[in-house]
Length: 349
Image 1 (cartoon, one colour):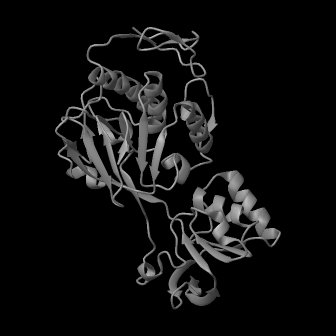
Image 2 (image 1 turned 90 degrees about the horizontal axis):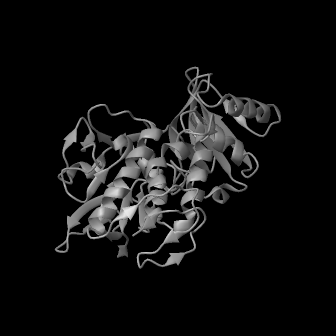
Image 3 (image 1 turned 30 degrees about the horizontal axis):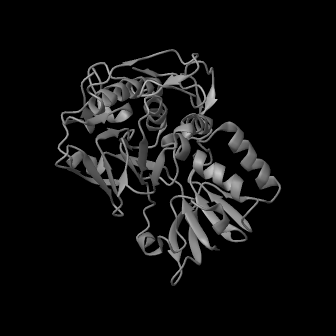
């Protein structure tokens, strides 16, 4: 059983920033995410997409924003349960909650913050009848360990940033990389498209467009795929087939937790973004209220107010004074002066 002060469901930008805001209040966080790495959509769907509405940063790539948020919260040593989906929640006699994942990992906390973006993500799968037979046997929807593909033949299908980025990355690892897309035009960042074309000319990536994989062959592991182009089929030998068609957002099991749901979003109040169940909050794109804007900037604001409310619930007899983060030092709960971790500057009195 994993114990923490705030259990955060979702490790996207809003969830990651919650770690920092909670840490300033000396509250420990643990994050659960169905994806194999932190960052949510920023890491999985568009790591090279520029973001323009982060204060003080005229432009930052989504992947770099994730790295910065992880670095910002690192001082507070958050825990992570990645590659697992929050499945069930049970309220305990002491008022805390136990959240169990689809893999049976249990987490207990007095505060639960749902920061799941648009919900848990399921990979969009190509319409190939036998694809389920090859999952974890040469078919993968995420690349968790690039070293698995060293000196192997890899077929990647897709036309977005993930397909382009991984094709470029694996060009120096795999013995052969083939990128297949059903259109001639790619939807990824321009520099990625240009890089793929450069690697194609250098003979490091095979690009087949417009085409699609329509069948998978093999006994206990992928051995080849059928590529259909211009109504003609070609058998392409390969060791791995990786369709990267993006992720389908779903509220998933959280929708069965007894929360007030409206149009696949969780209703909250705007005082502290608490749900209809005391102790459970929803922040970021997963929530809804009058005037809601689905912006990363708004998620950061919601996370800040949520943490203030969580602290009051956990320490109802303590008061705190918010000081500027340019002030050095932090007062401990016992009133003693202590060194601040980096620029932490909350004064607790």
